[in-house]
Length: 164
Image 1: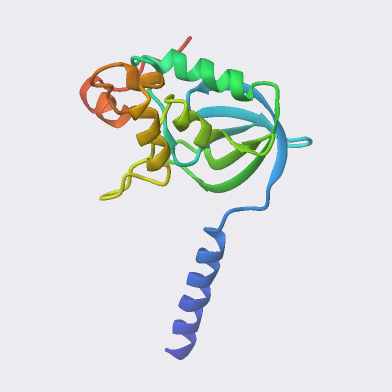
Image 2: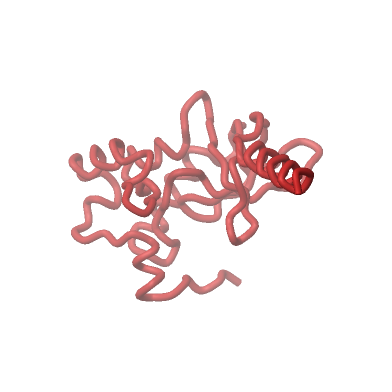
C-alpha cells in the first residue's frame, strides 16, 4: 500500500512538472489561420500549429474575424517569434505564449481590440485590464455595438465552414 501511494505521488509530481511552461524556442511565423491561431516553423522540426495563450479572437466567419486575422498577420507573419508552450488544446494545437521583438502578441491583440481576454469560470481572464482599455477606447471589435464573444457565436451559429 505504501508503495502504491508513493507511485501515485510520483505520478502527480511528474504531471505537475509537465504542466509548467516549456523553455522558449525560436521559430518563424509562416501562416496565420485566424486571429488567435498561427503556424510557427522551428528549425529542424515539423510546423507547429499554435493557439495563442490567454486570448480569444473572433471566428473567421464572425464579425471582425477577417480584421483580427489581418491584424495578426501584420503583427507576426514572416517574423521570428519566441514560443513558450503551456499545453495542448482539444484540437491538438499547441497553446503557447508568443513574443515578437520582446512584445507579447496576445497582449497586443487584446490591447488593439482584435481579441478578448480568455475567460475562466468566474474570472474575466489575465488580460482583462487590456480588454477594458480597448473597449473604453473603442478599438477594433469594440467599435461594434454588441460584439459577440466567439464561444457565444459558436453556440448560436455553430462552427465556421472549413476553407477548401
